[in-house]
Length: 443
Image (cartoon, rainbow, N blue to C red; front, side, top):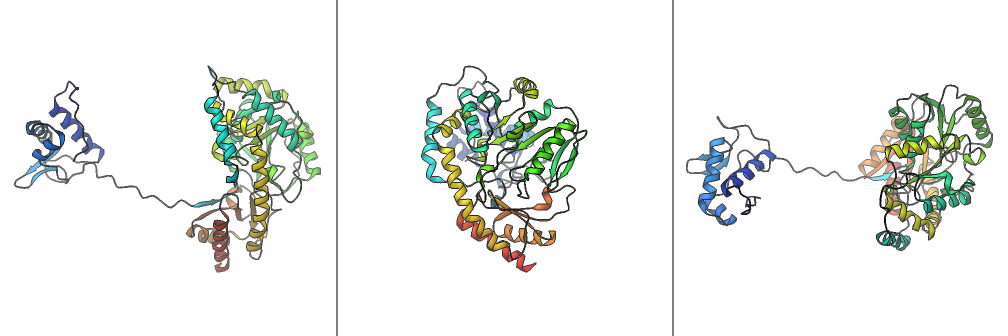
């Protein structure tokens, strides 16, 4: 039966409705040239109309050249014959590619044992009264206060809720900072976070490469310097205390803002979490934090602690652009923080990463060199690019996606693999490591 529906309440004649719908099926490719049309008697029975209605529609479509009658063989959709209009080819059913399990640096492990609190948070959202108008672009006051308390307790950053701004992830915080800074270049670690580079370029600025393992001694002419001091992305080292002081002194001297992306500092298991760089100089450092690593990447929620000297402009730009995370998501995070969900998830994830890291090291250390300490949810390995490519291909063949270190580099001459171990299950991680080792042995 053709997928058509006739509406007797429609003022148009039933035959016109049928002709219109068959014509639309041909145009969309649902009916292709060479498809046989159902017999008029059968179609009339299927649709519950008289045969004359179907014949009227067919006569119209024949006159327009959409269908053709073949002597003794019925009626067919026109196409590929002299005098017939060209019809769109039948749409092929799209081939669904096998989804690869991501072994990247940003996919966290979430303990399913804490799902009850997650569900309770969303039940509370469903019974809460939403705001009558647009949200406060700064974020819900209760959420800002809870984030400030957590920053003081876990990151050594003593601020109150008035200094915290809730954003749609760290990317949104960086974009709004860029919007209120001078149009000068921005320095970014190399190798470094690719999304940050893309955002700087999209803002119309150029990027100045900062060698990731060297002290920052020159920011002249730069509006800002983007850094990941607690866990350099992707090489993994902690910025030494002396280098932190050098960076801050350089930024003060050259008038640059330091943007600290503190993306996964809570997950260190080799040492105690290093205090945030912003705790050393609140006037010079803008702090970016995220819920993506501790709760869920698709939550798309983060926070920014903005220095006072740019805070008013930051707020004005967000108000102007109506940029604020959705109220239900903010309200859910209030419950998750208040009821201890985030603390519990971080503790269990830290234990899981601490158990998985030695397995990764044991598997890969015979074939590659660690780029830095293994912390958080990934490790980075140095090896020749050709060998890294072959290992990645072996992993992909087994159903896993692993990133190449060279993809994080711009002028840095480094190559290897960035192997995440937060997202997969334990069994998947073992299979992925077996595939990587197999590829490294062959190379």
